[in-house]
Image (cartoon, rainbow, N blue to C red; front, top):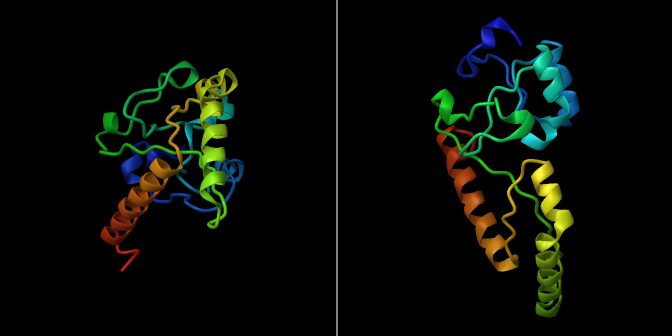
Length: 159
């Protein structure tokens, strides 16, 4: 990590693009950018690299610290940055699915979210199991859209 980026709030170059995490991490290690946003689970393969000093995981955006290999990574709030952000997995269907089809997929995905395999994956990837059926998920996505749109307006990116 560059000396000039010892404080994330002073970063001069931030990689925020559609590149794969691996490409973005290569850009950080190569000194082309100061920091990148990435999910905690995508950083797991690089946690050992971070301990060796060629990469530093600055913060996580969760309300509390993670466990395991990420236990020493502070939250953004610990850095004095008022940010808590979740990421989510979503399954989208065609807009013209019937009520019966939606009910079927709600049932299948609800069972999946209760399964031992899913719970293990959630734990191993430092996620939270917050399954929501389609109606709740739709409302959640609409609120996320509104929140992000408002934030982008505040930053001058959206009119």
